[in-house]
Length: 363
Image 1 (cartoon, rainbow, N blue to C red):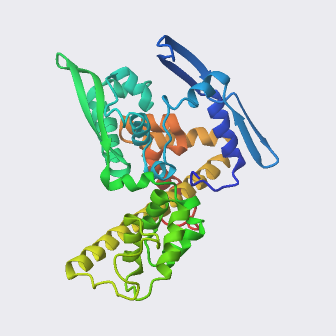
Image 2: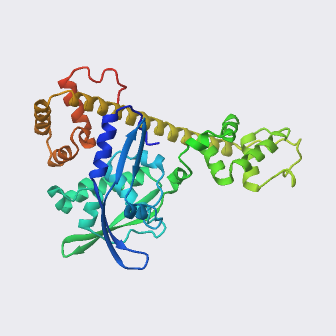
């Protein structure tokens, strides 16, 4: 579901250990309007047994995670589109306010905590925070997700003290809200729609809007109509106008559908080209992401093969080769998993161990 397919149990153990050691803190109003502060380990326990991983939250945290007023369901397809942690964090913190249209005012210290940069002196400066976190994250949210956000700032004198984000739905990517795709594509009705020439995205849209049974019924009915030159167009009309065979179509069964105008054909071709381009872009991003994950895996394996003294020397050498404080700070926090320094890390290990990535797909 999250695009990770590996037998690397050590990395899974490290991830679970990190989640158990991570502290979750909340400061909010309870159901009676009273101020409530709490703290909990992110995971109460995690266990690997016979190839199965199970885990549990603490009761207090589980109660918060279950509350739909606090958390919104996030589409995994949208999550996978993000390439930066800041962009994804901003999207997750904005999406639950989409119905209200605004996040409300956040003090800068709260925003830094939400973005995970509260312990970095570099981001104490609003100039750095705006240039390296806010602007890139907003741009990625607006490019990659189903919402569009715009930051607004509140100042005290010349200093920015608070910010909020105006939120509206992104009409160009609203289709991403339909579903995660995998379950729909496994249904027989999806295969029938694709066989009729319906695009992947349109097939999922129709199933989501009308339901699998209704679409199947319309497919069966359209199959009985004679002289239909454009089954897809006829099916679209049947779904949109609710034709069910009892009221009949707007023309006799034997009457062929009229030829579409040149303008309609051109519009349909342009629409199909846009859909194909969008799907190709998704496939390209998925391939690039898989290649990057594979390279990070190779780096992790190479680092583990070194002895402790060598590993320490490797990290110090890598730090000395990074130019900016932002890059060095990210490497200190994330080590060889630093996405911000991915190219520098891959170049470093290619020089350390030539041929390390030869058997992996190119980025």
